[in-house]
Length: 299
Image 1 (cartoon, one colour):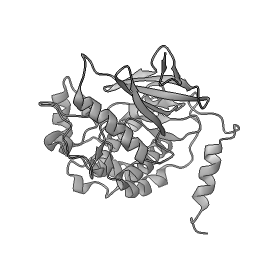
Image 2 (cartoon, helix red, strand yellow):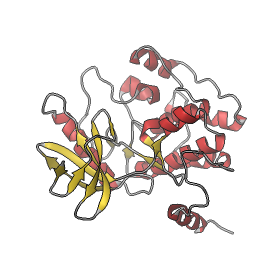
Image 3 (cartoon, helix red, strand yellow):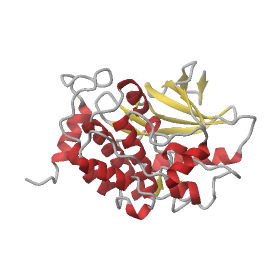
Image 4 (spheres, one colour):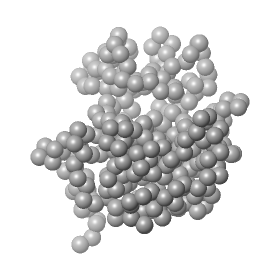
């Protein structure tokens, strides 16, 4: 299948989510691999989904960060909206945890810290992700992390319309902050709560709050304290407890503060066999990041 007279797509999708399906493809004009995300509208036209899909494209266009995919193009084919994005080679953190089990403390902290860096850039633009979870974090072969799927993100400055349906709460119950569940409110600290759920899951290998229904999970998110993680430094458990505080004001002030608190634990990272390229393979991304880290870092 070819869309836009230039994007040749694979026959089968790479994956499907709540809003659409993602295909690998090839840009004939620029001779590069791309990922193409189609809006999926069951049963015909859905104005709200189309607005959210368009808004996601605008958010990606504004968010310039190495930890977020680059948006190349946006259009429609056969009355279906599509986004053309940078193709990300990697595996989701959900897959890493599923295959590896609980991650070593340094890797859990490093993944969370990289997510913090992306959130800091997004929050500076008044963009709140609202759906941060292991399937939306991609671990690349060089060890870098990409934050994906801004389909539920909120632009605080520009979003005057409420993209909700009667009786529906937008988000993933296992990673939603209490204020999102109770009042439909999102803020930078809501994203930090979600990242706390992800960090807890990376360290334990299991979801923090589960239940037979969404409402059972909602009840736990709002009322049940998170159990400490066994076998990790006491300071890291205190940090996780702060992230998972039910009141937003008790959580870390912002993503930058959380990044600083995670740094002491993201040291001595060993290999994750099967997920990363070996250290003997040069990584231009790591080379670049290493030198940027020296700039203005002091003596």
